[in-house]
Image (cartoon, rainbow, N blue to C red; front, side, top):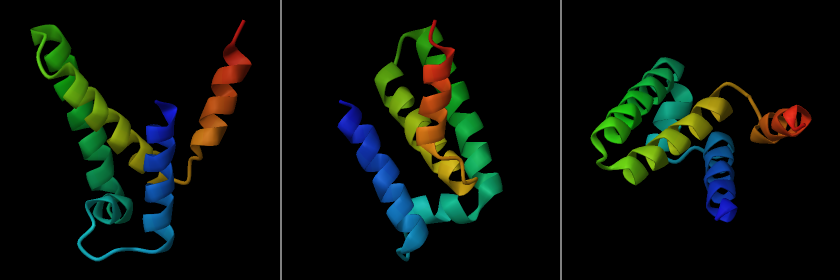
Length: 90
């Protein structure tokens, strides 16, 4: 399960280091305003899907993908985010 998230992180980091022409991920990595807009758009779509009880899984996947790319575009390591969450455990 979490291996899929790890694969997305690895692919995103690889695209950041080795851009691939025509890559949507590279487009998001290179255009931070677009990446930000997509995160906001996908979160709103997820909220709507939850409220209407439709496409919740699809929209959740979109949110996770776009958030991972946004974090990488802004040099925020997911490992640091996970460490922060561990610190918050009571």
